[in-house]
Length: 358
Image 1: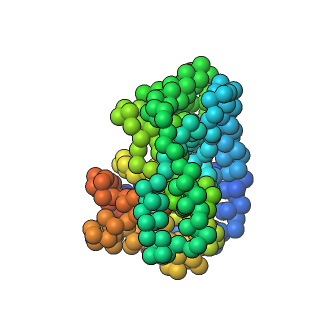
Image 2: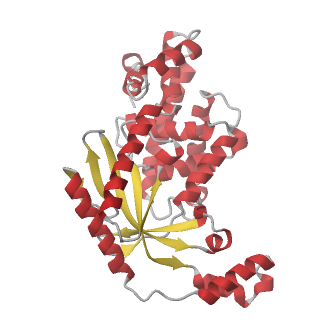
Image 3: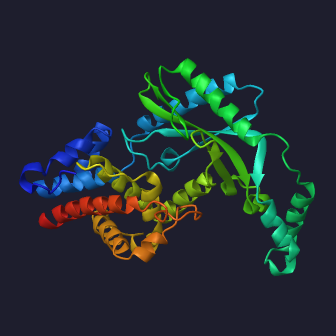
């Protein structure tokens, strides 16, 4: 991030860096409505913050989704009879993607088997009246247990086969296709100029899914080609719903903060190795009452202060959980703490610029 490093010389660069991510017509409207009464310096900083918090234009997002749809069609045509389910995950589904630095993730699920939490179900049924579950819920768990049968096939071979199929089809249709990534096949659509990651996965039918039949509570186990194993389950559809719901309660401010930090990370001179996973968790963990009615420039200080306090309280930082509530964000990735410090420093520079212009 160039802003405020050499304050006089580089003040106006961040706006030019982010300007081309957004529709020019939107830029002029935003400028007329938001910045008419600001000084030149103040206006430039305000533009950067406002645009960094804004969603990319609808056309750009539509093209990104179209790239995903084309991949899905190629796969569906080539995988007829394989009983595959396709779903999207990631920042495009929460409208927190940023222009030029986000792709779309297409999950491909084999339906030959599902993992389950059968042992947890049976533990609940051992002492049903102490479990806290209702009579109707216990009936659902009993039915699930009574109808449960172990899969007799080779689940890893099923996942290998699906990954191989994804690779073969993508290599046929796309010149730029990377099949060597551990967790995804990566393609670049030259016509649409979009990246798509194709992920091989299987379902986990959690206790919550058995009780609710709601896909938000259905876990995803991603196949890792390099380790020939499945990753720890995650709940991306629950995470998507959590972000969308909480942001609606805050009139979009949660998503604004997420986009802002992603853009700051992307525009920084230094390489900041933080993913959407970490950034989402940080923003999601901020109590909504702190920002639900906050002015957008004031959210810059809020974010800096929140990251500063996290970094100065390691126990609290290590207790930070993912948006779906299933994983500690930094406990197994201590190296990311230094990256968070870099991001915090970049936000501090922007906040200084806001303060200096007042």
